[in-house]
Image (cartoon, rainbow, N blue to C red):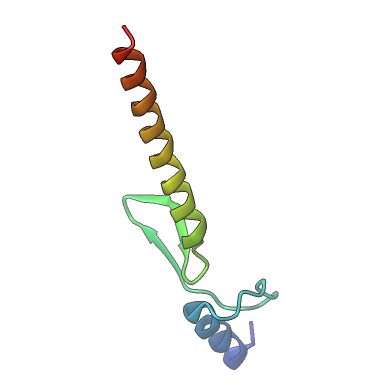
Length: 77
């Protein structure tokens, strides 16, 4: 498989996160995995940190609202 310089450029762009274009056929990517769980694979530079943070914040808000609702119910008895 050719693409030497193009693959290196694609990997560098992925690391920077500046170019959020989809990968093209033949582009090289840096892939990491946990040897203890090889089914979990991460393509470096393609993480969705904003989505993950929003998901964590949403979960935290649900826990806080649930706790507040429980406190209101218990106080009303």
